Image 1 (spheres, each protein chain N blue to C red):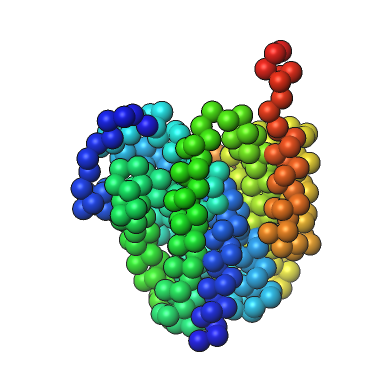
Image 2: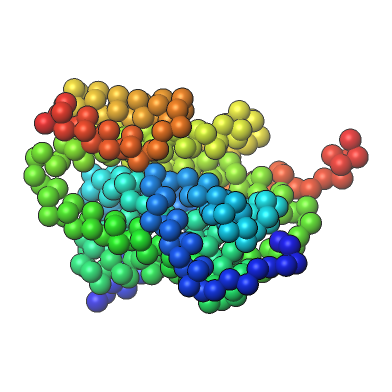
Length: 186
Length: 181
């Protein structure tokens, strides 16, 4: 983050994040964020954006809302974090609520039921594609693939609680990737 | 009232466990809301998730609809707050600590170590949804063939083109309407 953090009004912050919240159909919110924050408003430079994204992806929570918290905090402190996050969440929440009311009222209609079957089938295809796209590196490296398989089997097949799985597996996975001096010397 | 408290407990914990994004908690969420608490059926869960793909903003906002199924509007609001607030609060304070750890080689180790765990969880999420939405033993083979085919077609199209994913979800709905209706 550069020293010259621009002075941004809370109203403007809400509008910029709200616009992303309204327009980001089909996921890929990170691309929308980059366009708005780096290219258009110039609130962050490229390095600042990548640094924020790195934190957002590592911490628990959704990447999009974490980015809102981090960038909002950098620009306007706690109030900025709150305003940016609300801007990100509220539009989608309103639209999904409207879809949901329609869903609850109509899902037993046979015509609607077949549409929902198709929609759900397509959503699985989308999730598989996203998983493979961001995960192919982990799937071809044996030392990573072991962790992929172990986590899949524990959580997906045996329904071991996610908390227990993370406590058991995460320290081991991080230890495998621990910083090592020999690697730096090589 | 006790249902609201239960909703808050479940979704607040899921919020804090969402390492690497919302889809990582999908398998755990499916297991808890469908099999343990019986708040929604497995088909409803898959349909609610896919509705989330049709709305803008974070695609996990759709979890609010599970709250709506359980306790109406109060449940919806309770789930929204429980699912987003704890993780945002954690992020607010943890990002300060993270800034202070700038340059530590352990930051890189945490990121590279967590990556395969996230992928394993996302694959488990694919399985949790797919076991009803793509291949459902209770349905006829021709329906299953079609749902598997729609999923495969979407994955291939998204790999080869830069089309907006929401459009492929709508196309899946159209395929269901014309081929299954």
